[in-house]
Length: 371
Image (cartoon, rainbow, N blue to C red):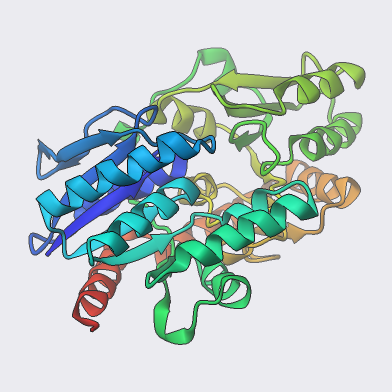
């Protein structure tokens, strides 16, 4: 069976594709179609790079470029003749589903967090939701979490018959996957979060939380890792850090390669996420795999992997409550160890890709057989 993946492949989506194509059985072949400014590293399967195309697909809305991207995708699909076109992200979802529709190919859509969740105004939310409904066409939804599947049914109009879920999953993290940070960082006590300062990640609440933690633990630092090329709330976040006098305690780390990022994660005491929404966050899964307790906002995606009171805390968007949870873990080494161990257990049970990849293959096969 041939599966063609199309989308904007960055961050968690890039990880999703790399892991699944690497571990799928020999019954499958894959083709990759990405955007012009996506990760250019080759996708490897059985030690060899996959066939990979680049089209005029960009994050920003541009009718001319988007139309060109659909035309390019149609040509590629006609040439490759995949059994399934698996579309990822908002832009890739629209372009891929229209291209599959025009070529009469079966399509699957994984939003990795629906676009309308990113809208900062009611008007934009309605526009993005309308686009999701229009682009649905005859596609099948494959949520990257059960919450995403249910949201697609509730808001976008998918049904039980055309809405599936396959939880994001990753391999075990081994020492060879990790590049240690500077020696000084290894001996620091710090809280960590991974992700660019953006509306989704809610970084201003993160600063508010750490301001409160700092009052009790002035020696504890906070590392925000992954401040990359697209960080729309960077200036506002820096301004609030400076306003609270946290310049020496709140450290923003530029975009790193995966091994370097895992190095920072390895020595952290607590993982904090204040996201407004997620699909199912790869960074949180990696923190769980490395035995970290999680303090998390109780939102779609986060609540699919964080078990409140077991491997961390799920809390409302309240800086005081989130700070109390972080402080409790910093104060109690035994509690950190207990919840960290539980994180590994939850990860191994529910999010280890070695155990889950067959489920994805079965979904592909079931959808391919549908008339």
